Image (cartoon, rainbow, N blue to C red; front, side, top):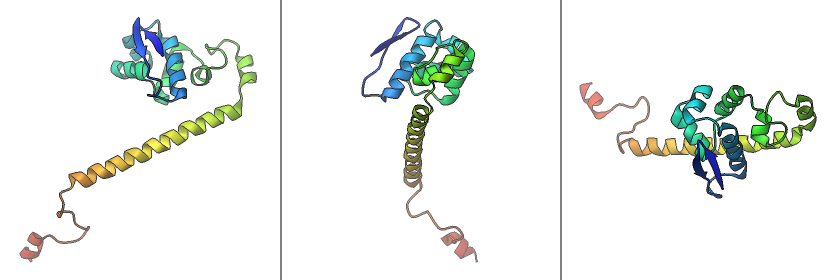
Length: 153
């Protein structure tokens, strides 16, 4: 799959990201095509490298999506779902009639589940890193005395 940002080619491996993220990335590329990464950074108030990463690898934060939509006056619904008008001000009445709230809620649920899974993975990594970084044998229960503290008494 290939898109273009600032005349640069963006290649997305079909297995690297979910179908939702792949479609979102294509829409992100579409609305940001006329802008450089620096301009997108200025619009969103995000770091230029963060913008480049979101626009080439996908999986942007919701804050980035919100700020981008605000700055470019793009419909959040269109960007996330690919339905309705691209611009916020075009056909708002049609967009409201076209919203399928159950589909939107299902997609929000999928994203929430994905975030929960990611959070569990991060928590497991942190726990593992903490366990690896603590010297064995020197860990002690809160309130227990070390040998030095016992000698002083």
